[in-house]
Image 1 (cartoon, rainbow, N blue to C red):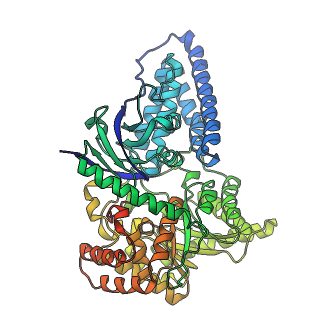
Image 2 (cartoon, one colour):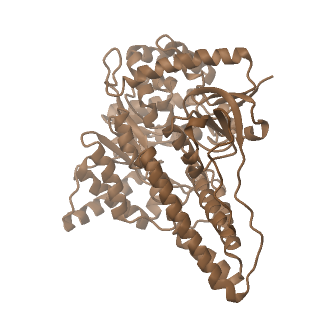
Length: 593
């Protein structure tokens, strides 16, 4: 009987082929001490290995830029920064000098401390940085212990294979020989992990977060990997292979059609225009979004500037990042979210005691208002960026009017200082909020009096409404935006924005799901923001479904009392216009999908 594993779809495509299980690990270092006279030598050896690792990563970065482009090459920048991080460097040197440890053992202990601290966070962005730690640890320890760089080219594979591994680091991924690999399946990882981003750039179908697949599969076993639905089948039957061959043909025809849509209007058949923007994590992704047909940026996450760093970025660094994105879309809106830090994802320079429940703790706008030394430079940089385009300032997790008022006061103060200094900015800048909690949805009419726009973050809204941790795999079936309580809160927010005359958009993952798009259009929400790779697919949905049909189906769904009934009603409505088998029928969203 076939073994089926469902994970997170990381890169689209369907492939069938033999498994190749890649097993790798950072070598363990024996506990070795050195005599006092050898301490300076060990310190020098550490600095030499660190410098060698930096040079090697720079070399790989240049190769990646040539093969995949400058955006993907930026993935290696955090590793270079880590190797220069004073806490990491000085901490390792202190272990050598104070405890007379070998350079390799001292570095290993310091890395263990970092891994332990970062592992306490469940946030994908920080978990992704653990892979960067493993990358530099593997490289530095191999150098210090005299081990060669491992061979990840799969030179012993005699045919194209589906690579199976516990996880992949960025430098392992870019060293893979594309001509030998059909697809990638990993036990760990997220859709935003660097290895997943690189897999998409290499056009390798990939599924991540498959729990224990690498322990259950042997070399040579036949696999089906569906990178669109996020499924791997081990030892499939002939019937399984036939079904997936048919599905692959349908998807390829669909994708060919999508290629033609990039520069067509996002408009429904009954001529309702839809603003279709992109969600991005890094400045360089703006160009990719534009190529995919984005009409601006609906969510520019700014956490990349702070997470994993031991010092806050200065105003100038932030300004350059925001200006880059604004200039990529000179005639369209760019929504930049202020730091969405939380109880489980603090930068290293914000030392905070652990909280009982970090998702209900010191998060997002609460952190920023309590840390003006962190918040004010960001607000100044954002204001300066408004001189280069339609930059809109978006505040996360706002729960009450006072939070918006306090932020406006800070902005006015910084705007006045910029004016005194003769630094240009647009005095007509716009400030809005993300609606991410039931409380915000319930007081949306009051918030609309002070906000220039609403952007609904469905990931957190679903989590907080249903009391379901969006990262808990056991509760995944309960995490759905099609719960009657969620769709009624969405309607309340949309209605409040419409009555106040402000734009209401959605930048959460519901907007990247075809059934979610059908729901949102039916609620009268005609501004959506999704990942760049999802833009053509969502545009196809928009261009296929008449708005009046979506409204009719959603009106019926609003009268239903269970998530299953809502899903069935919406599926029936959307299915009249689109072949839903393309999407694999996976309507329950995880935030990674």
